[in-house]
Image (cartoon, rainbow, N blue to C red; front, side, top):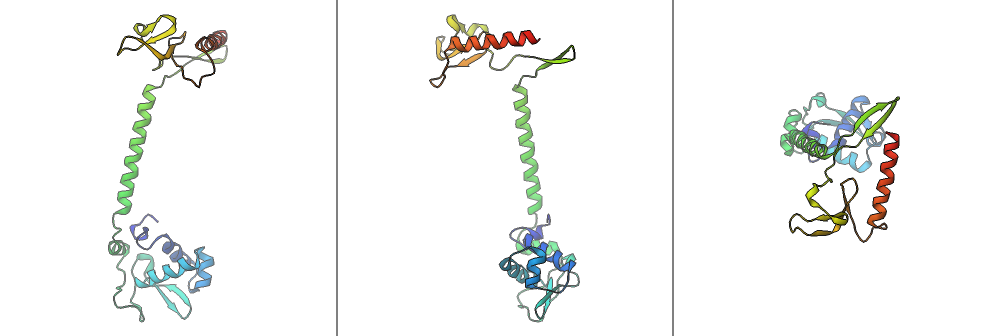
Length: 212
């Protein structure tokens, strides 16, 4: 399947399936090929014509069989074939005729580059994530929080838990500072006030300290 000769704009994947079916069971009629290859009637007819144009298959009456060197990509000239079609001279020759030579290599290079870019993005993301420290006490694992990117420096703190905008020096309307020094974004969709959020945080912190 990875060979350029079986790319979408060349022989296609159905050609490989039909070649395999004829290799396993030679001399099959179209109806039989549809069953042994699990390829539809229309695709089977189109693929048989494409393979015959390259001399990779030949028919006797209603049955089809592979050419002697079809598995190597070498075809034969059929007596009733169109003179404009020349027998295939190997899989590379077929790929070159259809303009698909190098498709697999370019696809592999693209996928390699995409995987590298994705891994780079994951690495950058991991750099900004806090890694929890695990302490084992009495056979139990306890996670100890570490500094996070949403913690702000003390100079940005304003009275009442508000946050100073470093650009203007004035309190930012939509931001508050939690008791642990982390930012809380207050939006109209929030159902709890800042005091309620701070109380919830204090309760969660108390529970964590009781476990630790």
